[in-house]
Image 1 (cartoon, rainbow, N blue to C red):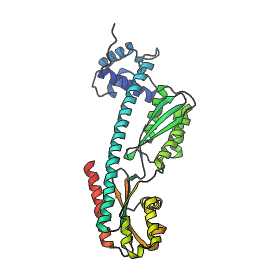
Image 2 (cartoon, rainbow, N blue to C red):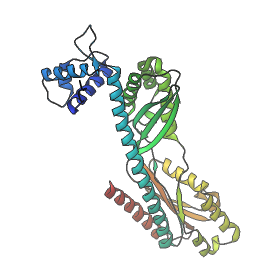
Image 3 (spheres, rainbow, N blue to C red):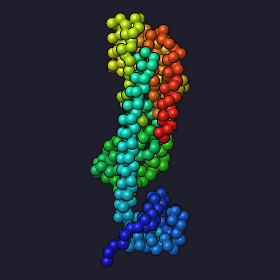
Image 4 (tube, rainbow, N blue to C red):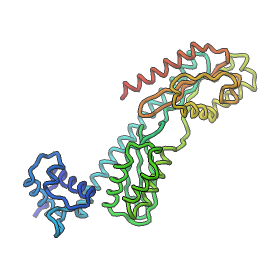
Length: 346
């Protein structure tokens, strides 16, 4: 006799049984499923489908109850389907991010060049970084007996992959329970909102697997606070030589080194972005400039925002006698255009 095919209706009923059982730990009856699915089926129809699922080996009926629970075969199908879907989502997300990064890279180089040409000063712009990042979802999956992969996706579709050690092999059911537990409690939270009481509660619910909860929370903290190299694009450094007060060899070479090495520019960007109210224009004149090699310059910065907490800094560096009106207008125009461009793309 040929094995029956698992059609869409049976698949949805099986998924509903497994989700319900994972949440409650109780055998699941047809009346529960009739409220749980979007199929609008009667209890009698669901009972027939459940009988088929039992015959096919996807669910079993404990002798003490009229409800059903998933079999190993049922869990396996559920996990494989879920993992396939999640892998597909992550792959699409990664491809989209690579494409966006490539386009953003080209755009920001053009912005830096445009500012330098229009103002006759030096310019810089940082790639957008995620500010006060929030968690979108977590996916735990088995690598081998001693290791798990935690895929952590944050706002702005920033993806972090972490290999976590495990002291014992976890069943598919336990991995599913941990995924549900973590996503139910942590999705949408910033790292500042994940407090000790919440972690303790999660550990308690995870029971003997509490160590994995600790490792995942550490991985989230590390991922959100990851101090990656900030990408900064510059243009117009040779414009510095146009101004006699900046053109002597030592001054000019110090300024150009700052543009080439970018470490001090990174600190300037981080200072600007760490200020919650830094969406306006900031003007640093002479000694006010946080970069020592630019004490004879003025630095004007603005923060641009691209939604989902993505922010960056755009700046113009020139002599103290720079045309401040022109520079401020140029920065306001650029930040407005970046904002408009982002809205069109989303």
